[in-house]
Image 1 (cartoon, rainbow, N blue to C red):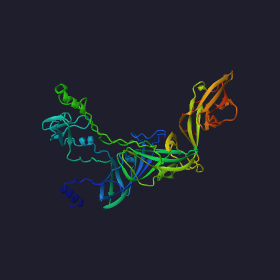
Image 2: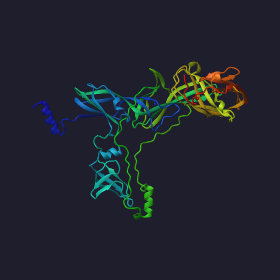
Image 3: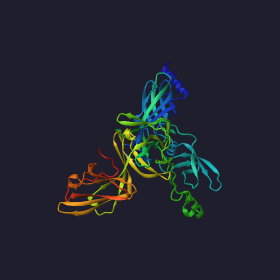
Image 4: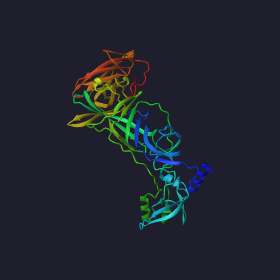
Length: 529
């Protein structure tokens, strides 16, 4: 008898199909690294949408598996639910990988029911009157899409339509269902071996954000700057004690759909047996309170992501992330292991920079069309230079900034603004909101055939002098004014110091029929080069 035939006979005697594959299960990784990339379409003025995170992560897991000789299906359990199977790379198998597949059949109320179609289960019912629990055998005759039909010794009926609390009881989990997201690969090995393999893949449902906190000095010329790195995950898998990094910058990446998982929540709608006229009023009211009237909705939902306080004052001591160059991108490595938990946010220290030199000024965009309107508030702007001489000199990832002052020993919020990615050496400007105490008003003071004359009056109600800038929204060649003006984003800029509790004026002329102007950039948008 040939060896192949002998093996087939032995398999038949053992009750094992000759073509069956050995299944090897890796329950989880020994080590894991998570690198989170921001949503490329989300600007820093918008916080991550915790219900729809559109960033992604590169996950690298180290696992140990014991392989038999020949072919085997290796199941990597506990991968990210948003894994992109086409991105998976597995290294460390002695003879490579034959094929790979994401197992989409996750354990859920719907898949548990669908995979039990035609099988015997038990219906457990509780009596309202006595509290007694009764179990009845039943066979499932319909899928989870809509009402559930079962056959019992009493006949055919729909689940949850008797008016009694009831549910299905399964004796086991059907074959092929997994309680956790799983990636399967088929591999070959010439001999039994224990291998250390590295599984790397991309997964959707992640994002991160920088959140800056600036504490203003009493003389308003410096800030102590601290930043949180806020990691967000909407994935159902937690990565415990992960080596965690965040990448800043724009990554060119093609869109890829995450394969949907089979199943999901169970939605059952039913009207109680009998009509409302057959039910006593008192019982009808109790049923309405329980949700029977108008149809019963039973929905299995996931946990909600909590929203932490992103603007808490910085801690006294914190281990900050280490910044590294990654080609044209910037990588921020967290020096301690971090648990990237499922459906959650986590904040870790990003950077700490004490005694950063800054300047506060008040700015307005002034248009002749506003002549005669009431005084308008100006915008508080924080400016600095991203260089070592001013206390910075490092890449600053995009995010939101909250400026705090102090009064009576307590921190007070002075304003919040948005900062884009800032390279070393760049000038930084962050608009922090309107301030009613520094106002500007423009008036038409006269005109002739060629010119209209305007006067801008700016008032400071503070008990200290302030720096003020007016961006005059008009082409310079269409204007006449005394003195010299600067430039801001191509427009004439009047910069002046307004004394305490005082006002200053600027007189200028504008041609009557100037060329058409383009619209000014909206406040808070990114400045051009």
